[in-house]
Structure formats: C-alpha cells, structure tokens
Amino acid sequence: MKKIAACIGGGVIGGGWVARFLLHGWDVNVFDPAPDAQRKISEVLNNARRSLPALADVAMPEEGKLVFCDSLELAVSDAQWIQESVPERLDLKHKILGQIQSHCSDNAIIGSSTSGFKPSELQEHSTNPGQIMVAHPFNPVYLVPLVELVPSVKCPAQSVEKAQSILTAIGMKALVVRKEIDAHIADRLLEAVWREGLWLIKDDIATTEEIDDAIRFGFGLRWAQMGLFETYRIAGGEAGMAHFIGQFGPALAWPWTKLMDVPKLTDELVQKIADQSDRQSGKHSIRELERIRDDNLVGIMRVQKDANWGVGEMLREHDQRLTELVPQIDSAPDLSQPLTMYQGKVLPAWIDYNGHMNESNYLQVMSIATDNFMTFIGADGAYVESGKSYFTVETHICHIDEVKLNKPLEVKTQLIGHSEKKMHLFHSLYQPETGVLLATGEHMLLHVDLEAGKTCNAEKPINSKLATIFSHHYSLEKPKGLGRSIGC
Ligand SMILES: NC(=O)c1ccc[n+]([C@@H]2O[C@H](COP(=O)([O-])OP(=O)(O)OC[C@H]3O[C@@H](n4cnc5c(N)ncnc54)[C@H](O)[C@@H]3O)[C@@H](O)[C@H]2O)c1
Image (cartoon, rainbow, N blue to C red):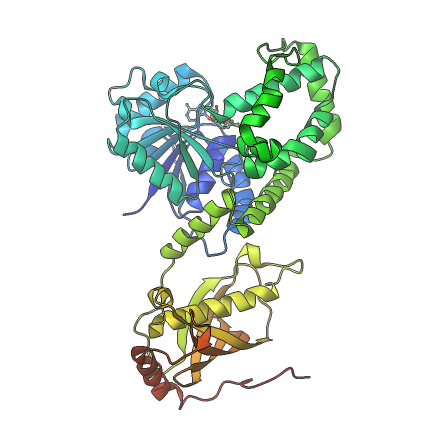
C-alpha cells in the first residue's frame, strides 16, 4: 500500500516534516494557505536533500511524490499519518483538528507538532479523541531524530505503538512521554536555560554571543553525546552520582538563579537581544546559518555513528532498516554471465573534497558485492554464526573512471577460480545506465574456521555451489586487468 502523509501547515516545522517523510519514500500532501508556502518548503527540501542522506551509509528509498493541495480535505482524505503544524494557538489547533477529523480515515494517526499543549487539551471537543496525540519534533525535523510522542489516557496503546513504529521507520527516535505535562520534556529543560539566558542579558552579565560560547565551547559538546545525567555521573568521579548530588545539590538552593522568574520582555530588552544577535550572526543569511548548522549536525552524528554511541547507534539501526527497503540481489541469476552482486548509488557520505567517491568506498562497494556473493553461495549470516566464514587475504582495486555523487552503480562478479579453501573473485563496477566501467576489484578469499583461527575446507554445499558457478564462468572471457599488480 502506498504510504501517504498529510502535512497541515508547512512553515519551519511543517516543511521539515514534509522533507523527512518525502525522503523516506512517503508521498506527501501539503495544505498551507500562505502564498509563499511552496517556495519555503522547496528551500527546506533543498537543505534536507543535501544533508539527510549524508547520515546514511546505504541508499535512501526513492523520494515520494509531493502534492500541494488546495484544500485540507483533499490533503487528509487518504493519508495514514496527518501532522498538524499550524501556529501555536489552541483555538486554531482545535479548529484545524476538527476539520481534519471530519475528512480523514478513522485509522489515520493525527500527530500535533505543538511545543506546549497537552494532548488532552488538543482533544477537547473531539468525538474521536484517541486518534490525536502530540508528536513534537525538533528543528530541523529532517535531521534531528527526536520526536516526543505524548499520548493522553484516551489514546489506545496500539495506536501509540503504531505511531512509534512509523516514526522509527522514518529515522526518528520516538520518545514516548509517560505522563502528559505542559511543554513535554525537552522544552521544559530548554526554557529553563533560555529564561536564565534572558536574565544574564538583561542584567548586562553576558551578550548573546557570550552565552552561546558558554554553551558551544562547553557543556553543549557534552550534552550532544551524553545528556545531563550521564555527564554528571562522570563529574562525580569514581564516587558516582550520589556523591555528585551531595556536593553540588545544595547549591541549587543558593541564590544563584532566577529560574523561577521570567524577565519582563520589554521593547527595550527585546531590542537589546535583537541588536546583540545581529552583531553576532548578522553576517550570515538564515539559509547560510541553516546549512552551517546542518553540516555540523551531520558531522556530530556521524562521529557517534563511528563510535556506535547514542544517536549513532540509532543511525546504524536505521541503515539496517533502509537496507531492507532496497531491492535485494536476484537469488536465481543467469550463471552464464558475471553475476550482479551490488546495485546502488553513490551516497553523499562517500564524496571527497573533489566531488568524487572516496577511495575507501570503492572497497566498501566491492566488499558488499563479496558479502552478497557469499550469501548467494550459502556462506551467509547463519553460516558465519556457525563458526565458518571467508576472510579476504588480498585485494587489488583499479580506478578507471570518475565516480560522482548520486550516480547509480552496479557490480558484476566473476568467479575466477576456487578450491575447497579458496575463492578468487573479480568485481567490475559499472555505471549501469551507460555501461561505462568505473573500477575493478580482484580479491582472494580463504575459508576459515573462526574459532580455531585457521583455514579449513568449506562445507560441501558451498563447494558444490561454487563448482556450479565455475562450470559456467571458466569459459567466460578473462576480465581485462586480471592478475595485474601496480602498473605504470
Ligand atoms: N519553530 C520551532 O522551533 C518549533 C519546534 C517544535 C515544534 N514547533 C511547533 O510547530 C508548530 C508550527 O510552528 P512553526 O515554527 O512551524 O510555525 P510557522 O509560523 O513557521 O509555520 C506555521 C505555518 O502554518 C500555516 N498555517 C496557518 N494557518 C493555517 C491553516 N488554517 N491551515 C494550514 N496551515 C496554516 C502558516 O501559513 C505557516 O506556514 C507550532 O505548534 C509550534 O509550537 C515549533
């Protein structure tokens, strides 16, 4: 079934939702009466297209179809997920949610982006209140994974689970808030910091820039990867969290803070903040700042991906899900030809400063082709689990033509030779649309007993599959470059 999302309101947040769904293959219907909504959404989409795929080490699904609808009714009627992102006014949200519910399917999930209202407040006046829940995202929605999913007691558990699994499938971390509260979890924390920042400016203690420096050169770096409590656990040293609270907890009651009060936002204070902000950041346009922010976010998240930590662990799991969406290799290919063992495209994360694919990613593509070949002959995950596998002992890669961003790639694999303990593969990497040969990879693999750490004979079914393939491949023309060492 085609997956269709409706985004009602396409501003800063609605536009981000459009991008997140669209780039995960959903068709998206948008309704926003603002005359410049299409232009703004296109600009958000451009930012999303250059940054979101850079988080993935596998191909994203084909982008869905974007439709700007003339009416809310048209947008929601066949949608499975409806995301309300209109301005933060309860009367407006009630009106829009009422209109949505008169025209949408009873099975659709309605998420509201509200930063502050509780789901039970949004559900007032609704005849089907359990269909509405808060799905509060963070800007930029297409990159930052967190979404606070806040149900009220009227939301059935299976709707919450369904919502969670849809959000997970579009690469988000759905944090289910166990008890509704104004402003959910994250904005309560952010508002506490923001309130204190406003006081510091009002009292001439610090400028906007100095406050931002205190965050980005300091605790902001820690928060991005360990949050508040894990960071403080370490700050307690070997004595741990209880010691930390014993040492610093009493300070919370000292008169350091004005956290409970909000400075009056007089015209003078607002102008002071705006002027300081202009001096701090006015040299960049908002779109430039967005791109700088997006590149930094991608970098911060990719570092954690390498470490398989925090948000990075989630990104790895998401790659696994995305892989399952991509068509798998043919399980019964024509053996009389080299076998198609990889189909994909050049990912943004693979591009170097010259706009070409990094050297390491040639090897990555070749090794995916080798893994697929191993699966094809039966040396699959279960075989490895059983304690046997193949190890690559020698590789020669030849770079033949330019490989550029987003270009489709295809690897054809020829079995050059095999024995009970060895297999010799030759991969040819093509641009499938033009048939241009881009690179070749020649690989020798030994069959090993993983526990003993020694070579051993492959299991019989694997050897006989290799023999069948080789009975076809031995008469194929030997690929150009076979057996080549570094040439001049
Ligand atoms: N900006 C943030 O950082 C942020 C973060 C998380 C959640 N939110 C929440 O997201 C929601 C939207 O905030 P935003 O920042 O995107 O605001 P925004 O002003 O950028 O966008 C609101 C959009 O709603 C459209 N709109 C107004 N009336 C409409 C109607 N009747 N039908 C359809 N569209 C209509 C407007 O034309 C506008 O494009 C709010 O509830 C806000 O609390 C905002």
